[in-house]
Length: 492
Image 1 (cartoon, rainbow, N blue to C red):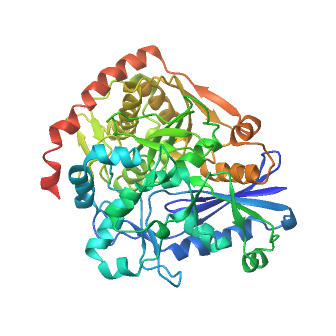
Image 2: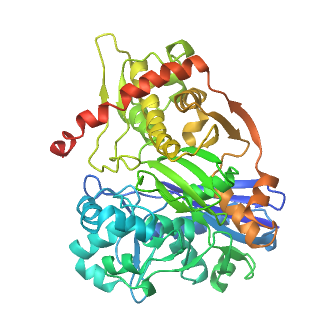
């Protein structure tokens, strides 16, 4: 049988076709636009997601026996606000995960409602990218749109709704809305009241590997696949990526160097944050839980620096001068806050900066500082997890940035972690296909699928001397943001 995993990303949808043995048959990617109507805003047209996904599936299945398609599932960009009216029409462009317009609403939730109350209701505090602050923003600034709203959903769930007609979401993705009582896996009545919505406006909750329905007849006919094709709930992109890298079970870790950067640590049981809400406390796609730190700009820092500032796309050439003897000795530092920062700062007004340049600073020094700054940002979230008594000594690593041997080495030594590089680095799309296979009974559960499918190709070991050097640099790095924090609001 064949299984389709759909990774609904920020700049493109990536579709993956997997066979029963867990082997990748084909991968297709389709791009779509991203809109920035105002500084710090980020929006997309949900119709583009559906159109490009349908075109992608058609291309994915060219030359294949379409009758063998058994299941479809998803990994999707989290936190986005999609609103439908009574006729199931999209009311306004989706407000995305990296949108920073909700400073006022986030402050209201954290300071007026209170962090302790939010943790009690949802296990998390408010971050600017979460869905609940976006709902409050629409309620305040676009009351006519808020009044029309009948359904609230997340990006991948809009796609699933178009495919099946079933109004659904999964626990992992719903965890990032600030509307879910994560510990008890149900919608929070208190948060619905605070946001002025009813539970009827929210989708039914499923485990990521559960069947929510089958494709609609017209969808099956357009794609040429059976009407019996199962659609599983899917997961938020990071949870789906964790499945694709085998990050299930107590204390497993995955680092993603994608557009955003994430540190993902799985746990068999719910972990109370006890006020340490600088990282997220979410449900996992295998039915358990996880902690996650998310920095808003990771590989996007590299893209911005290399393409927009240096005006080149030759990434290896820009990193070629950064030899091993230079690591741990750079005097230039970079704060990776191009879109503000989420974990662990929770500061949408934070901004990127280089500091420490002198007359002998080179282009390579600046590039190295950028790569190191992202690694230091990941280390910030790792320190929070360690403060909760969680011991992590190794991690898988995925995402576009992980293809750089230099960046992998920097991350391994900054974080003092053994990094494992999976044979398949497709992340959310692979995880989506695996969830579809579980929903169809191909594998008994998610952990079994991971054990059967995920393989490690090579490892990156930290070097004790480099770890020592980077420890000193990290302690310097962590002093820069506090020194500049009061300045950032004045720069807006």
